[in-house]
Amino acid sequence: MNQILILDFGSQYTQLIARRLRSLRVYCEILPFHAPVENILSRNPKGIILSGGPSSVYDKSAPVPDPAILSLGVPVLGICYGMQFMAHLMGGKVRKALKREYGFSKLTVRGSSDLFRGVPKHIRVWMSHGDEVKTAPRAFRVTAGTQDVPVSAMECLDRGLYAVQFHPEVHHTDHGVKILENFARRICGYKECWTPASFLDETIAGIKKRTGKAAVICALSGGVDSSVAAVLAHRAIGKKLYCIFVDTGLLRIGDRAGMKETFQKKFRFNLKIVDASKIFLSRLKGVASPERKRKIIGHTFIEVFEREAKKINGAKFLVQGTLYPDVIESVSVKGPSAVIKSHHNVGGLPKKMGLALVEPLRFLFKDEVRELGRALKIPEAVLMRHPFPGPGLAIRVLGEVTDARLAVLGRADLIMREEILAYGWYSKIWQAFCVLLPIKTVGVMGDERSYENVIAVRCVGSVDGMTADWSRLPYELMQKISSRIVGEVKGVNRVVYDITSKPPATIEWE
Image (cartoon, rainbow, N blue to C red; front, side):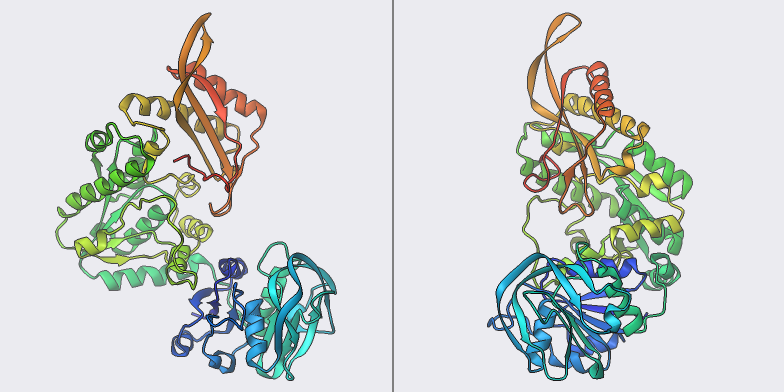
C-alpha cells in the first residue's frame, strides 16, 4: 500500500500530522525516529515527514535518526525539530532563538514553491520552538520567514528536501492542511484516494488466512471499537467467532437489551451473555475507593471472561478493538503516558490464556473506525455511542456501590439520555452521564421536608477525550432533565450541572 511515513521525534502534535493526512485520504503510518532504514524501505514510502519534538539538536540525548533517511530518493519534509535536524546535518547553523516563538506568527512566503502552491503570501502560522535555523545549508533556498525567524521554511529541490519551522498540522495554522496536501500529492506524487473501507477486503482476507480453522473469541462490550472489530471478524470467519458479553450489573438501562437486538438478531453472532452481576456486586460491597473499585472490577472481569472462554473448544485467538493511538503510544519516543486511572477489560488475557491477538483496527483512528462501521452496515446508534467506562456505573456511584444506589443512578441516567436524544443534542456531545453523589440535601416535596440524594449531570465536548470542555446545554433542556429526574426518580431531590473543563478535572468523576 502506498503511504507517507512519519518519524516521531516526540512532538505532542505527531498524531495530528497523521490525522490531517488521513483526512486528505492519504494513508500514513507513524514510526519511532530510530526506525531502521531497512524497515522504512520495506514499506516503500512515497515520502517521509520528520515530526517536531521538545529536544535541541545540541542536546546529548537528542533523538538522532539514521542520516541515510535524507538520501533514500523520496521527498522528506522536516517540521520544527525535523527542520532543525535537517539543517544541522546538512551543514546549516542552528541556534537558540533570540526570541522564542510560542503561538501565532505572521509568515511571509518568498518566491514560488510547490510546498506553498495555492497558499497566500501572508498567513498566520503556529510556532512552538526554542531553537531556530540561523543559516540554511548551502544547497537550500529560504522559501518563507517571519519577522523574528527569517528562515522559517527552506527547500533543496535537487534532493527533494523540504522543511518548515511552524506546525502545518495544527488547526491554528492558516492553510496548514493545504501545505501538507501539497507535500503528499504534488511533491510526493501520492495519487490514491485511501479510505478506511478501502482495505476492508484485504483485512477480511488477512483474518481468514491467519486464524485458519481455529475458533476466535471476542470480548464484546457494545462500544464502538469492539463492535466494529467483532463485525469485521464475523464477516471474515462467521460462526467460528465466539463473542462473550459480561453483564457486570453495572451497565446502563437498555445496554444488555441493545446487545441482543444488534448482535444476536441483526448480525446473528454466536453471542453468550453472562450474567455475573451478583459476583461483581458482592465483591464491591463496602468498597468506596475509586481505585479499589476499578481493580476489583478489572480482576473480576478477567476471572469471569477466562472461565467462559475456556468453555470454547479450539480457541486460539482473541479479537481486540485496539486503535492506532494505542499502537503509537506503545512505540512513541515519549514512552507510555502516566497512569491516571487503571482498568482495561481484557488486559493480560491473551498472554495468560495463550491466545494470539487479532487487532483489525490497529491502524485506524476513532473517526475512521466509525467510517468503517458504516461500510459494515453497523447501526448509527452503535457507531455514535458515547464512551462508557469499563467499570460502568460503579465509578459514577460515588462511595459504596449497592443495588439501591445503582437503581437510582440508572433511572436518572436513562432520563438524561432520553431528553438529550429528544432535543437533538446527543450527537453534539462527546460524553454525557449522571453521577450519584455521596451526600443528601434538604428539599421540599409535596409540602413536606425531604432529605434525599443529589444527581450531578456531566456533559462535555471533545475530539479525542484528551481535553474536554463542558457542553452549554440549552436552559430548556437542562430544566427538563432536572424536573424529570426529581419528579420521577424516587430518592432524588436535587440536580446539579458540572461546568468544569478537562484539565483541570477529568471527564469522569472517579
